Length: 343
Image 1 (spheres, helix red, strand yellow):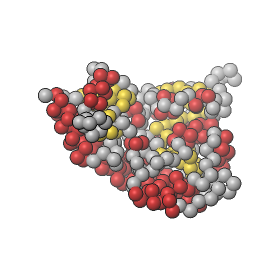
Image 2 (cartoon, rainbow, N blue to C red; image 1 turned 30 degrees about the horizontal axis):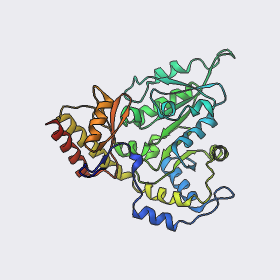
Image 3 (cartoon, rainbow, N blue to C red; image 1 turned 180 degrees about the vertical axis):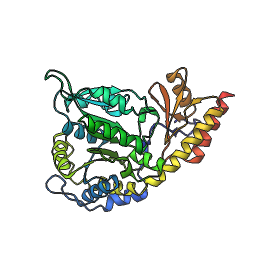
Image 4 (cartoon, rainbow, N blue to C red; image 1 turned 120 degrees about the vertical axis):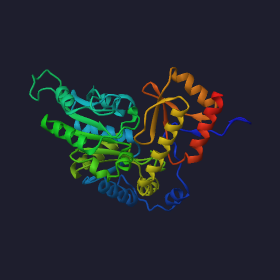
């Protein structure tokens, strides 16, 4: 910022969280090995702990969440298969078409008729179509869910609805992948263990660098056979990081911080209440993401930037994301600047 400009308050994403001193020390002290030739002990520890937390048999560390999702879709889909995902899902809109390009799947969005970010079982059943159509028809083989749903403002799918969707998918002959990039947030919001939100899925991805402070990394989890196959796809995609323990070590610390996410959720509610009091059209956040409806998104973002408040567009609205590097005082200061600018 130039001299005299306000100190920026960054609500753009929970991916901007920086590793703290404890994480940097863990990175420096990490025990490492060649994770391609045999294994890296710190990565192995992270994978086992993540698998346990997610209620899965095994897990695989990946450099990014996009890679984790792409690996799962590549294993679940054959070329020309259709897969279903809630409209606006990250695998549909924010992963550069890799599901079609590399995994060979035909994406088909389904509407959120059960609430933000989630379809009803009836909608899934209708979209899946008959299991034994003619050979020249698209074959639907996968349901990809997202919890929390980013573009719906961090909306949570509760366990009972998750169970109904998984049961419907099974009845339709579909596998189920869960994009759980922010599954930790859903678990914190519901005060449930993450494994309670993965019941019945064939695979799940979860991110370590969104809100938890790790500088990089995700996991993709499933049964042992799935993870062995996933390791080969990760290598194809260039994800065979050698001494990756230096990145897995902060990931292990990140898993100790899942309960801290509840504080980000409280700050999101405080920001929403403050903005509503100033006349903004905001939705009550379920987790750490707040969406505001404005007449002109680009103009609103420009005005906020002039106040030193950084945000991003999402689904035609302004998105504010709360995270561990935004304090209670930062929320109060952001509201003060907006109120002062309003006059």
